[in-house]
Structures are given as structure tokens and as C-alpha cells.
Image 1: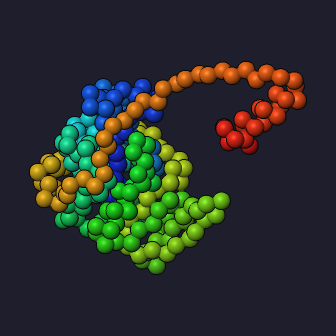
Image 2 (image 1 turned 180 degrees about the horizontal axis):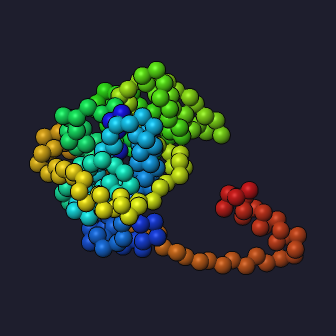
Image 3 (image 1 turned 90 degrees about the vertical axis):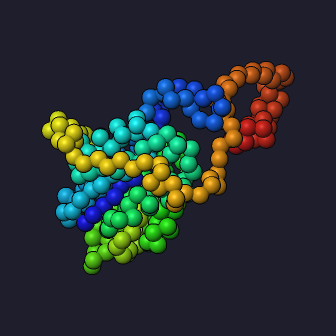
Length: 256
């Protein structure tokens, strides 16, 4: 089975939010890490390879720093990587990232494409579904389990209120993986050494530019939430204070 895993580098969860001069995104000097849902997608791809054989390829789009995501994936067991390398990929919306990925892999024949359910920064949960539509493949989201069945796959989807759905799907397909589907592995010392010699293909912005369209979504301005504290003293008898407090919790704060 030949599997492609789409991965993204995102700002670290505990990184302080510092906006760039135009206030359209965070500054480049923050710390970065692998998008957590994508890490689970990679782990599931590696497990499917261990069960069924085949190849795991990882792909990302972004500046030179994003290559660290691919190196980590190669160290964990991915066979090769594709890096769409250019600062301009950071400014593309989900639709254009999907278009760029589709263009970069147009000459490859994958059986399965996995993405994380959503990114920890934008949280759109769109790239995987859009990629499936562009390629004309079946797709399913919020996947909690994958198993082979009669030349295709059976997947377990997480629904609301603790319910699950089991779906039989053909190959090729695109799946978006839910965090917690498995237990993440660590890269071994041998894996880290081997990663240095594994193929990493770089794709320039110009090579996929013909497939791109004007962004349908743009960020005009970001704001860092301001922490404020306001104290209000409720006067009156104990009975009056209790009534006023309940009214505020119910009508103003809406916690009752």
C-alpha cells in the first residue's frame, strides 16, 4: 500500500503570541512543532505499512524551516519526503494548499492519503476534504480506526454524543485522522541517522503556480486577547445578594 501523509508545521502551543507588523499572522521568531493531528496521521500510516507493506511518503508546504517536520517523519519511519518550499505557501488558503499538493503528486499513484483532522493554528479541517474532491476520490473524516477489507478499507468514524460509524471505502481514498487514534512513537537513534540519507524532493512555488487560484479566504487582521479583571460588589441582605448573583450567572454570564 502506497500512502501519502500531509503534514504541517505550526507554532508551538505554549509559544507567546507575537504578531507580525501587518498583524496578519504570528512573527517568524516563535517556536514551531509538528501539527499534532498530523503526527497521529503519520503514526497510522506507519502502522498500515507495517501490517500490509508498501511505502509511506510525507509532504508539507512552507519555508525552509518546515523541512524539520519532514525530517522528524523520516526519522520515525517514512520512506521519502516532498517539500513544497517557499515562504509564499504560508499565505495560501486551504483550497490552494490542496491544489498545490495535488499538482505536486500528479505523477504518483497513491492508494491512500492521510491528513490530520485539522491544524492547530487555523483549524479549518478543509485541506484533506478539498484534496479528495480535486482528485475525485472517496473521503471520510474523523477516523478512529482503519482496517483492510476485500481490496478496500473499513474505517471507524467518531460522531457526536459518543456514537461511531463504520464505513466500507474503496481505494484510493483520502482520510482525515482524529487525534488519539493510536499511541505516537518516538524516533530512534538509528532512525534519525537513516533519515539523513532518505530522499527529499523539493518543489518550487513556480512548479505548482499554474494550479493555484486567488485565495478565497484571507486574514485581514489578528488581535491578541487582552486579559482584564473587573470586580463588582453586590450589596444587600444575604437573600438579596443570592438573588442578584443567580440572576447575573443566568442572564449575563449564562452559566446556569
